[in-house]
Image 1 (tube, helix red, strand yellow):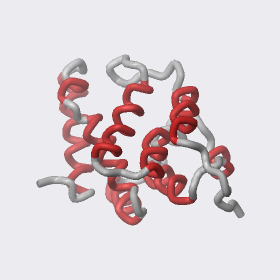
Image 2 (cartoon, helix red, strand yellow):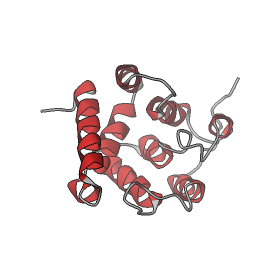
Image 3 (tube, one colour):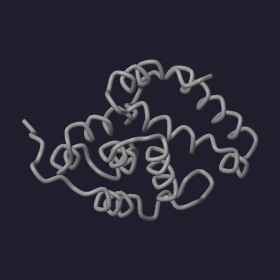
Image 4 (tube, one colour):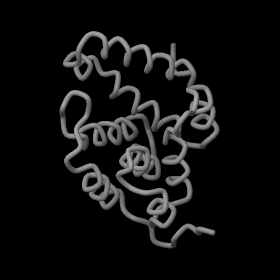
Length: 153
């Protein structure tokens, strides 16, 4: 059983861990992956997210991308809520978009992190550098997830 530590990592420390974990990784456009993490964290902040959600934003792809292990997350000096948000937004192999969206919606604080992630992923400036087929596929994928999360409108 994992318990929440009394002293949690600061947001600055979480940022440093996330940047180190994703060092050398690039996004689909060839940009340093840390730029995406920063944009999602800032998006959460701009949408009124709290420090737990901002920490989760920095870590939102770390387990999914195998940059940090699930064991690391379980043992990390983070709040249970931050860990739950990271796990909620971590896609699982073979999972349907509907199941994924349901888990995000069922986890307090996770929808805001996913909203900021989708907003940056769907940024026209980021998509513009991709080939047309990839741009179309991703635009449709992100729009579908926004709809499943009730973010349209």
